[in-house]
Length: 316
Length: 316
Image (cartoon, one colour):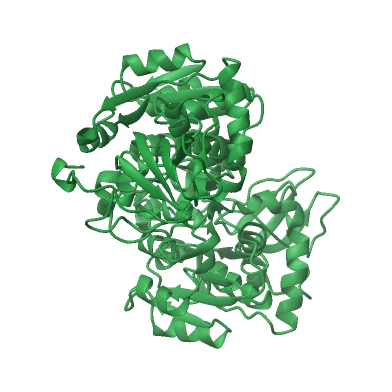
């Protein structure tokens, strides 16, 4: 579990910046499960953050000075700018925000990495067809709630799992057909009740017992999309593997995964779709904003304790 | 683990048979890992054998009387005829053997269910491309050795794992590039050594630690084909799930499985290919024959103790 002492708040001068760079005042830092992975030693899909480095995070703010031909002072931008008040960027991976399509917090949530993960993970990996049943765990998170709402738009029956009555009620109010409260209900039993013909697409944000329960309830030809493993991130040395993995064979299904960075060149397609759905009221999103960069560690902890309700952001 | 007392040898009259049926004298019973699954209660892809029922098994023999228009006395046939000396069949799923293409034991091995499993599991699920690296566990078994030899024919580099020097030497003599002795070697270390660019196709017959080691060594876009879980079959209530399953995501890979019965209508294609390769000497096969139906339980146990060397058959 993340501790306050894993981080230090360091005051320093705004560093010098050079030709080809921009200086950005950060307004919001995005608190995402991926941050926990970046705190581990070693390399997964990108290397961990070195001891003493600025913690990697998606953040967004306004350009206050530009020495880069493609960026102008005053523009709002988003990128892997770190958990910091001011950032310098050479423009690589820096996205200019069109605030007519969404707010800064939305660009860090449903129009940012989590939304892209939901969009491409569901549509490109899960490949849901109209009339199929989609089950998504961690459904109250921004990825999960976006997956569920996109699946509804695509004509699917949608079942979610989340912790606590408030989150479950919120999801039901946002179009989910059924929501399982994993804190009080037996997931396998509820899946048998709500998915009598089996799950066609399982979008997994949590791993552990929920993944095992989903594997017991796959429909023939099911796709299991592994996105995250919230229940496992804090002890990656002792991951509990899915003991029901052989059910993939029986279901003639497949298990794959989503790394959102593989779809970088198609983000604009997803942003167009999602911002249209937002404007049409077909998708709703919710933010949970914590004030003050000093609360970055506790905000991250909230995520793993399931205490946030909506996309978690630290506002500077 | 299978016990002698799980079975009874019952003497009974050869049952009456009717129009549309054939009476078969069984010569060989095939001892396959699948039998262990069929001994469990409940239904996986087919229901378990009921208490008191004739144990389900592939077996082969000669028609000694026929009241079926499609079958003639004297023909050799193979099918799910059970662990029995005489069988009655209505012809459904009964395959007439062309002994110019292979022997009866071969029709229960490399030209039967195990060979079909290897052929379709590797080619249709693993989809190996020339130049890729294929890793197969349980490589000394008939499925594993067939997978490895077909992968060589398809131009792949082939690494196998097996238990004991004899089996490893046998596989090296049959074209495998490298063989890991799981009894004395560290699988992860050996895979890192022999597959420096990663595994493109992992064909899993064993599960457990070998599956976890393979997951640590996947190449980008890898296919993991789950066929069996020899290390887990005797305690299916406490399966050890693959704790490294998230590596599928990092590798942008997929995990799927093979149920050979899905390819029933394409068996002749596989039999043609494999029998040609056998005649050309491109594939070799080995049988391990135990005499006497009373040894059925101990033969089955040998399989799970890795004591057989070659396709295990009980000869009646």
